Length: 397
Image (cartoon, rainbow, N blue to C red; front, side, top):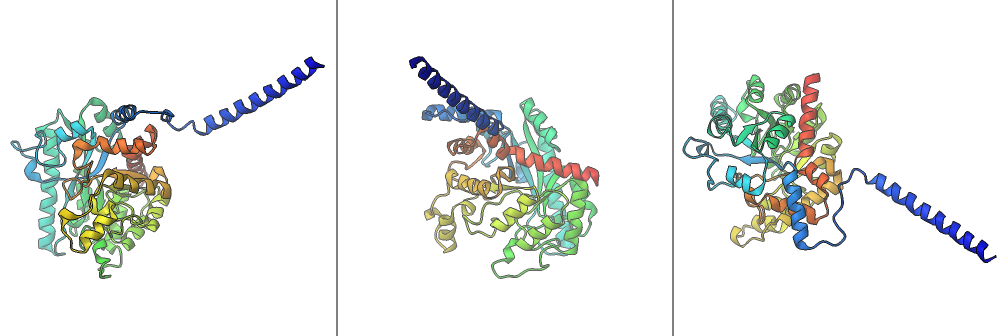
């Protein structure tokens, strides 16, 4: 009888073992798309080393770095460690692979003289970016037009330049200039900046409810169709909420917000509220959280809004910035969130105040528990996926 009991016990133990094994297989299958998790116990030194490995392997891409063309000359340029937040030495030190250099034009009068001055400004910036990549430092940086270009150039060891257009004001009333800007390398464009353009209302109208078009103008609607046709990503950072929602509704392709954070955390008109974030998600687009101090730290924004001295204001940190990434990921999903700095355009926070400190962003993401595969998507995968989709739809059109 004793042997019979032992056999029964053994049978029960075998069944329990089989159940546990099957359960383990099921969990492993469910998580098979995730990267290897962090060790259960990890020292600070080991965590930093793991983060460094991840940072070196993924393609880091910043969707918004402003430029001054005086820094793109034969004698004064980005091969030198200039007093700028972005340049080649700082990108190398910080491990920043891709910088979207911005053809930015401030909003001026909606007349022929204003349009002419804006166009000249835009061409000067396009030419400067090409000069850096093609004449000044072609051995160090190359201009990319597609995601395949990005991956090829990054794999070669060179830095990658891309071009975004901030404010469609330089188009004037000549819609053929949209195609000209595409041919010059522009791969995203916003229809407004601070002030209403001929295409779109700006978020700056929110304070007094003072708008020009009620969202997009008729030209703005035509511009959406033209950008879809050409393969230019529509950037909804800076336009008014009505303009953003109308752009998303009209666009046949996914849109981006090149440098905007979460309004639920910091109540700034440049940030995106939950409704706008959901719309970007449903459009299959991506919102690039931005490391701009008053966009990511509510205490600092409120303190400065009350007219206090900037020197005495609370400090915005990398942790504040990643709080916005976390919020957006939880709200709309990791596939729809990315990273930007707005360097040399007002951006910069404690811990990521220039391109040389880029690793600190990856380090904070690792501390928060993001896997390598997730970090790769946040840094560049999501944005490049949208670019691919926009260009695919343009080819179909």
